[in-house]
Image 1: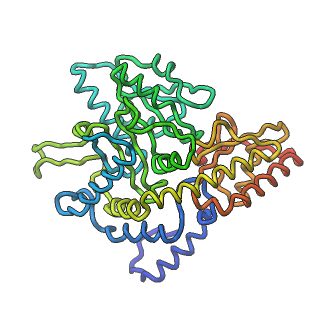
Image 2 (image 1 turned 45 degrees about the vertical axis):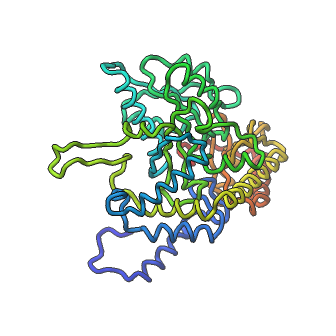
Length: 419
């Protein structure tokens, strides 16, 4: 470990060799050992992703429209493709953010400002109503923005309980929230019903499609049971989708899409002319932003197109269903239902002699980075195309771990903070 800045520089070839060596410390994502973090299809796509980023690795997207007009052109193209993909009406607007957390933060910040302008003189504490399964980034945003997050217990299928959410809404509610799908269980909240609630009560409805936004449209075409969830649903005010997940762009690349572009006026930050340099404006939270992420998203979306995304989605969903069928066939295990709406699923033990956390511990020892569920205790698995060739290998290791736990009586404990 370095403890001080070297007095002289190190040549690139040495540094490159050291970086390659350090990578040996990491989980082997090319062999499907990660359930998230990395979204990988093949080397050709990775090359497009990386080279496009590198071409804009120095430019700063803060200067888009001023000195880097190429970025403005790319953002317009990304917006056009996203509007078509997510059924946006004429007059929709889009912001390019660094990831799902910033997209959710910006949605809540914008809804808060819109509420305050719509209700001048309002002085009560503000709140947001969301199902218990909403992503924790909602609470992060609430903490920063001083918005109380009211998390409501979900129904028996782990979906938002719309009636219970409606009962939690009051005159201080700036937003209701739904997931498509939720990151915990991979199921869709009833977005159409939430949309009706939003219209009836004059509420802002945000739909979090950060995980599924760039897989759900294609999975639906493949015949998977994907409900309407995006701007095609009346009442949806805004939605988010990460291009750096199953859009396969370099990180960080996410979209916040508004039904009405006028909402962007409530999103942007502006510091007035009292600053010595004049008015400072940023469209989202970040000031300096990596232009490479925009270039990579633009290139990858065009490189893949509908045909490419259908291929990556088919591989992903084939692997997902292979995992689910295989795990359901292992005595002592059961996949949570419903499933098959997304490439996220969980499984639990239905045998008192099989401690599911002990199974997870053994899988970790075998080199699998295991996601864990707390309520109920279980294993969560996110799937991407790289998993398709190793479905059998994973199932063999799960089966072996179950048999070992059953024979030994080994127990384990939930490890907080795991994937």
